[in-house]
Length: 305
Image (cartoon, rainbow, N blue to C red; front, side):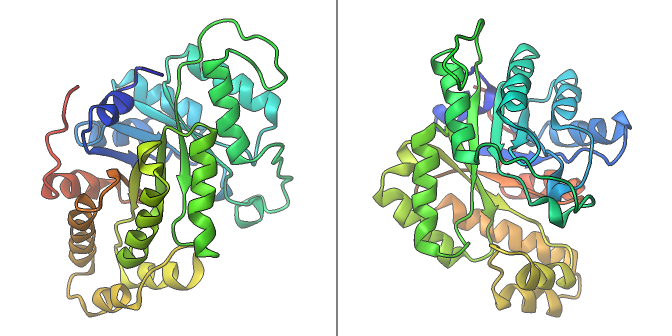
Protein backbone atom coordinates (compact mmCIF):
# COMPACT_ATOMS: atom_id res chain seq x y z
CA UNK A 1 0.00 0.00 0.00
CA UNK A 2 1.17 3.52 -0.77
CA UNK A 3 -0.54 5.26 2.11
CA UNK A 4 -2.69 2.74 3.96
CA UNK A 5 -5.64 5.12 3.84
CA UNK A 6 -9.17 3.78 3.96
CA UNK A 7 -9.87 5.30 0.55
CA UNK A 8 -6.85 3.52 -0.95
CA UNK A 9 -7.74 0.17 0.63
CA UNK A 10 -11.32 0.41 -0.54
CA UNK A 11 -10.50 1.35 -4.14
CA UNK A 12 -7.71 -1.21 -4.42
CA UNK A 13 -10.13 -3.89 -3.19
CA UNK A 14 -12.50 -3.06 -6.06
CA UNK A 15 -15.25 -1.50 -3.96
CA UNK A 16 -17.33 1.41 -5.28
CA UNK A 17 -16.14 4.43 -3.28
CA UNK A 18 -18.13 7.40 -1.97
CA UNK A 19 -16.46 10.69 -1.09
CA UNK A 20 -17.95 14.12 -0.47
CA UNK A 21 -16.89 17.66 0.25
CA UNK A 22 -17.00 19.16 3.74
CA UNK A 23 -16.32 22.82 3.11
CA UNK A 24 -14.71 24.72 6.02
CA UNK A 25 -16.30 27.90 7.39
CA UNK A 26 -15.57 31.55 6.65
CA UNK A 27 -14.62 31.86 10.30
CA UNK A 28 -12.94 30.17 13.21
CA UNK A 29 -15.83 28.08 14.58
CA UNK A 30 -14.92 24.44 15.05
CA UNK A 31 -18.59 23.46 15.10
CA UNK A 32 -19.18 23.97 11.38
CA UNK A 33 -16.69 21.37 10.22
CA UNK A 34 -17.43 19.10 13.18
CA UNK A 35 -21.15 19.07 12.31
CA UNK A 36 -20.42 18.17 8.71
CA UNK A 37 -18.05 15.42 9.85
CA UNK A 38 -20.65 13.89 12.18
CA UNK A 39 -23.31 14.15 9.45
CA UNK A 40 -21.27 12.52 6.69
CA UNK A 41 -18.91 10.06 8.35
CA UNK A 42 -21.35 7.13 8.16
CA UNK A 43 -22.17 7.56 4.49
CA UNK A 44 -18.77 8.46 2.99
CA UNK A 45 -15.40 6.73 2.86
CA UNK A 46 -13.46 10.00 3.04
CA UNK A 47 -14.27 13.71 3.12
CA UNK A 48 -12.54 16.42 1.10
CA UNK A 49 -11.78 19.66 2.91
CA UNK A 50 -11.62 22.40 0.31
CA UNK A 51 -8.72 24.88 0.13
CA UNK A 52 -10.03 28.45 -0.12
CA UNK A 53 -12.67 27.17 -2.55
CA UNK A 54 -13.63 29.62 -5.33
CA UNK A 55 -10.73 31.79 -4.10
CA UNK A 56 -12.69 32.85 -1.01
CA UNK A 57 -10.87 32.89 2.32
CA UNK A 58 -11.95 30.12 4.68
CA UNK A 59 -10.48 28.02 7.47
CA UNK A 60 -7.48 26.13 6.06
CA UNK A 61 -7.88 22.68 4.60
CA UNK A 62 -5.17 21.33 6.90
CA UNK A 63 -7.01 22.67 9.98
CA UNK A 64 -10.30 21.21 8.78
CA UNK A 65 -8.65 17.84 8.11
CA UNK A 66 -7.33 17.70 11.67
CA UNK A 67 -10.80 18.44 13.06
CA UNK A 68 -12.28 15.62 10.96
CA UNK A 69 -9.51 13.24 11.97
CA UNK A 70 -10.26 13.93 15.64
CA UNK A 71 -13.84 12.76 14.92
CA UNK A 72 -12.59 9.52 13.39
CA UNK A 73 -13.35 10.72 9.86
CA UNK A 74 -10.80 10.13 7.12
CA UNK A 75 -9.99 13.45 5.42
CA UNK A 76 -8.76 14.30 1.93
CA UNK A 77 -6.45 17.31 2.12
CA UNK A 78 -7.10 19.64 -0.81
CA UNK A 79 -4.19 21.88 -1.76
CA UNK A 80 -4.03 24.47 -4.55
CA UNK A 81 -0.91 25.81 -6.24
CA UNK A 82 -2.57 29.23 -6.52
CA UNK A 83 -1.62 30.22 -2.97
CA UNK A 84 1.72 28.49 -2.31
CA UNK A 85 5.12 28.20 -3.93
CA UNK A 86 7.07 24.91 -3.95
CA UNK A 87 8.60 25.67 -0.54
CA UNK A 88 5.24 26.11 1.15
CA UNK A 89 3.63 23.17 -0.67
CA UNK A 90 6.37 20.76 0.40
CA UNK A 91 6.38 22.15 3.93
CA UNK A 92 2.63 21.62 4.31
CA UNK A 93 2.86 18.14 2.79
CA UNK A 94 5.44 17.19 5.43
CA UNK A 95 3.26 18.60 8.21
CA UNK A 96 0.19 16.75 6.94
CA UNK A 97 2.16 13.50 6.76
CA UNK A 98 3.40 13.97 10.30
CA UNK A 99 -0.16 14.63 11.50
CA UNK A 100 -1.44 11.38 10.01
CA UNK A 101 -3.30 12.68 6.96
CA UNK A 102 -3.02 10.11 4.17
CA UNK A 103 -4.98 11.50 1.18
CA UNK A 104 -4.15 14.65 -0.77
CA UNK A 105 -5.91 16.21 -3.77
CA UNK A 106 -3.52 18.34 -5.87
CA UNK A 107 -5.29 21.23 -7.60
CA UNK A 108 -4.64 24.46 -9.48
CA UNK A 109 -7.37 26.38 -7.67
CA UNK A 110 -9.88 28.87 -9.02
CA UNK A 111 -8.23 32.10 -10.16
CA UNK A 112 -8.04 34.72 -7.41
CA UNK A 113 -9.85 37.32 -9.53
CA UNK A 114 -13.10 35.36 -9.01
CA UNK A 115 -12.84 35.38 -5.20
CA UNK A 116 -13.24 37.88 -2.37
CA UNK A 117 -9.69 39.23 -2.73
CA UNK A 118 -9.58 39.81 -6.50
CA UNK A 119 -6.41 41.92 -6.34
CA UNK A 120 -4.45 39.19 -4.52
CA UNK A 121 -1.36 37.93 -6.28
CA UNK A 122 -1.57 34.32 -7.44
CA UNK A 123 1.54 32.19 -6.98
CA UNK A 124 1.31 29.33 -9.52
CA UNK A 125 4.99 28.48 -8.96
CA UNK A 126 4.28 25.00 -10.32
CA UNK A 127 1.16 23.61 -11.98
CA UNK A 128 -1.13 20.88 -10.68
CA UNK A 129 0.53 18.15 -12.79
CA UNK A 130 3.97 19.10 -11.44
CA UNK A 131 2.43 19.14 -7.96
CA UNK A 132 1.25 15.54 -8.37
CA UNK A 133 4.71 14.53 -9.60
CA UNK A 134 6.36 16.35 -6.69
CA UNK A 135 4.28 14.57 -4.04
CA UNK A 136 4.91 11.22 -5.74
CA UNK A 137 8.67 11.87 -5.65
CA UNK A 138 8.45 12.86 -1.99
CA UNK A 139 6.55 9.64 -1.25
CA UNK A 140 8.35 7.12 -3.45
CA UNK A 141 11.91 8.50 -3.55
CA UNK A 142 12.01 10.44 -0.29
CA UNK A 143 13.30 13.48 -2.16
CA UNK A 144 12.34 17.15 -2.34
CA UNK A 145 11.85 18.82 -5.70
CA UNK A 146 15.48 19.97 -5.63
CA UNK A 147 16.74 16.40 -5.17
CA UNK A 148 17.66 16.67 -1.49
CA UNK A 149 16.79 13.73 0.74
CA UNK A 150 13.73 13.77 3.02
CA UNK A 151 13.94 12.18 6.44
CA UNK A 152 10.89 10.10 7.32
CA UNK A 153 8.03 8.74 5.26
CA UNK A 154 5.55 10.77 3.20
CA UNK A 155 2.76 8.20 2.74
CA UNK A 156 0.05 9.81 0.62
CA UNK A 157 -2.70 8.47 -1.65
CA UNK A 158 -2.44 11.13 -4.34
CA UNK A 159 -5.44 12.59 -6.11
CA UNK A 160 -6.08 15.08 -8.89
CA UNK A 161 -9.10 16.62 -10.59
CA UNK A 162 -10.36 16.18 -14.15
CA UNK A 163 -12.95 18.06 -16.15
CA UNK A 164 -14.42 15.93 -18.95
CA UNK A 165 -16.47 18.84 -20.31
CA UNK A 166 -14.14 21.80 -20.85
CA UNK A 167 -13.01 22.80 -24.32
CA UNK A 168 -11.24 21.59 -26.33
CA UNK A 169 -12.97 18.30 -25.51
CA UNK A 170 -10.39 16.07 -27.20
CA UNK A 171 -7.65 17.57 -25.00
CA UNK A 172 -9.34 16.58 -21.73
CA UNK A 173 -8.26 12.94 -21.85
CA UNK A 174 -4.71 13.99 -22.77
CA UNK A 175 -4.59 16.16 -19.66
CA UNK A 176 -5.93 13.25 -17.59
CA UNK A 177 -3.18 11.03 -19.01
CA UNK A 178 -0.56 13.57 -17.91
CA UNK A 179 -1.91 13.51 -14.36
CA UNK A 180 -2.11 9.70 -14.29
CA UNK A 181 1.44 9.42 -15.63
CA UNK A 182 2.64 11.99 -13.07
CA UNK A 183 1.37 9.71 -10.31
CA UNK A 184 -2.29 10.47 -9.59
CA UNK A 185 -3.71 7.44 -7.79
CA UNK A 186 -7.29 8.72 -7.97
CA UNK A 187 -9.23 11.31 -9.93
CA UNK A 188 -12.30 13.30 -8.88
CA UNK A 189 -14.18 14.77 -11.84
CA UNK A 190 -16.22 17.89 -12.41
CA UNK A 191 -19.94 17.51 -11.67
CA UNK A 192 -21.73 15.37 -14.27
CA UNK A 193 -25.02 16.43 -15.84
CA UNK A 194 -24.21 15.66 -19.48
CA UNK A 195 -24.07 11.86 -19.28
CA UNK A 196 -23.66 11.35 -23.03
CA UNK A 197 -20.52 13.48 -23.08
CA UNK A 198 -19.17 11.80 -19.94
CA UNK A 199 -19.68 8.34 -21.47
CA UNK A 200 -17.81 9.49 -24.59
CA UNK A 201 -14.97 10.79 -22.38
CA UNK A 202 -14.83 7.53 -20.43
CA UNK A 203 -14.51 5.58 -23.70
CA UNK A 204 -11.42 7.64 -24.50
CA UNK A 205 -10.18 7.03 -20.94
CA UNK A 206 -10.56 3.25 -21.37
CA UNK A 207 -9.05 3.29 -24.86
CA UNK A 208 -5.86 4.70 -23.31
CA UNK A 209 -6.01 2.29 -20.38
CA UNK A 210 -6.16 5.19 -17.93
CA UNK A 211 -8.91 3.59 -15.85
CA UNK A 212 -6.38 0.88 -15.01
CA UNK A 213 -3.73 3.41 -13.96
CA UNK A 214 -5.91 5.60 -11.75
CA UNK A 215 -9.27 5.34 -10.00
CA UNK A 216 -12.00 7.54 -11.51
CA UNK A 217 -14.52 9.01 -9.02
CA UNK A 218 -17.37 10.69 -10.90
CA UNK A 219 -18.42 14.11 -9.60
CA UNK A 220 -22.01 14.93 -8.60
CA UNK A 221 -23.56 18.29 -7.71
CA UNK A 222 -27.10 18.03 -6.24
CA UNK A 223 -29.22 20.86 -7.66
CA UNK A 224 -31.64 22.70 -5.39
CA UNK A 225 -33.38 25.09 -7.77
CA UNK A 226 -33.91 26.01 -11.38
CA UNK A 227 -31.92 29.17 -10.71
CA UNK A 228 -28.91 27.10 -9.67
CA UNK A 229 -29.23 24.87 -12.75
CA UNK A 230 -29.58 27.86 -15.03
CA UNK A 231 -26.62 29.67 -13.42
CA UNK A 232 -24.36 26.65 -13.83
CA UNK A 233 -25.45 26.23 -17.46
CA UNK A 234 -24.85 29.87 -18.36
CA UNK A 235 -22.03 31.03 -16.09
CA UNK A 236 -19.79 28.20 -14.90
CA UNK A 237 -17.02 27.59 -17.38
CA UNK A 238 -16.28 23.95 -18.10
CA UNK A 239 -19.59 22.70 -16.71
CA UNK A 240 -22.04 21.14 -19.18
CA UNK A 241 -25.67 21.36 -18.01
CA UNK A 242 -28.08 20.25 -20.76
CA UNK A 243 -31.24 22.31 -21.31
CA UNK A 244 -33.24 19.19 -20.40
CA UNK A 245 -31.96 19.44 -16.82
CA UNK A 246 -32.93 23.13 -16.59
CA UNK A 247 -36.39 22.39 -18.00
CA UNK A 248 -36.96 19.52 -15.55
CA UNK A 249 -36.09 21.80 -12.64
CA UNK A 250 -38.29 24.60 -14.03
CA UNK A 251 -41.29 22.27 -14.42
CA UNK A 252 -40.89 20.57 -11.04
CA UNK A 253 -43.46 21.24 -8.31
CA UNK A 254 -40.76 20.47 -5.74
CA UNK A 255 -37.40 21.50 -7.22
CA UNK A 256 -35.32 20.04 -4.38
CA UNK A 257 -36.98 16.64 -4.80
CA UNK A 258 -36.40 16.82 -8.55
CA UNK A 259 -32.74 17.65 -7.92
CA UNK A 260 -32.39 14.56 -5.72
CA UNK A 261 -34.14 12.46 -8.39
CA UNK A 262 -31.73 13.70 -11.07
CA UNK A 263 -28.78 12.93 -8.81
CA UNK A 264 -30.01 9.38 -8.10
CA UNK A 265 -30.65 8.73 -11.79
CA UNK A 266 -27.12 9.90 -12.57
CA UNK A 267 -25.62 7.55 -9.96
CA UNK A 268 -27.55 4.59 -11.38
CA UNK A 269 -26.13 5.34 -14.82
CA UNK A 270 -22.61 5.85 -13.46
CA UNK A 271 -22.67 2.41 -11.82
CA UNK A 272 -22.96 0.93 -15.31
CA UNK A 273 -20.11 2.94 -16.85
CA UNK A 274 -17.02 0.73 -17.11
CA UNK A 275 -14.00 2.30 -15.42
CA UNK A 276 -15.94 4.43 -12.91
CA UNK A 277 -14.76 3.37 -9.46
CA UNK A 278 -16.88 5.62 -7.27
CA UNK A 279 -18.60 8.95 -6.85
CA UNK A 280 -17.61 12.29 -5.33
CA UNK A 281 -20.50 14.46 -4.10
CA UNK A 282 -20.03 18.25 -4.06
CA UNK A 283 -23.15 19.42 -2.24
CA UNK A 284 -22.21 23.15 -2.13
CA UNK A 285 -23.67 24.05 1.31
CA UNK A 286 -26.36 21.33 1.00
CA UNK A 287 -24.43 18.63 2.85
CA UNK A 288 -27.59 17.60 4.72
CA UNK A 289 -28.86 15.90 1.55
CA UNK A 290 -25.80 13.68 1.10
CA UNK A 291 -26.75 10.86 3.54
CA UNK A 292 -30.17 10.53 1.85
CA UNK A 293 -28.63 10.40 -1.63
CA UNK A 294 -26.08 7.75 -0.62
CA UNK A 295 -28.76 5.66 1.12
CA UNK A 296 -31.32 5.86 -1.70
CA UNK A 297 -28.59 5.08 -4.24
CA UNK A 298 -28.12 1.74 -2.49
CA UNK A 299 -24.62 2.60 -1.32
CA UNK A 300 -25.21 2.11 2.41
CA UNK A 301 -23.78 0.77 4.60
CA UNK A 302 -20.27 1.64 3.49
CA UNK A 303 -17.97 -1.37 3.22
CA UNK A 304 -15.21 -2.00 5.75
CA UNK A 305 -11.96 -3.26 4.26
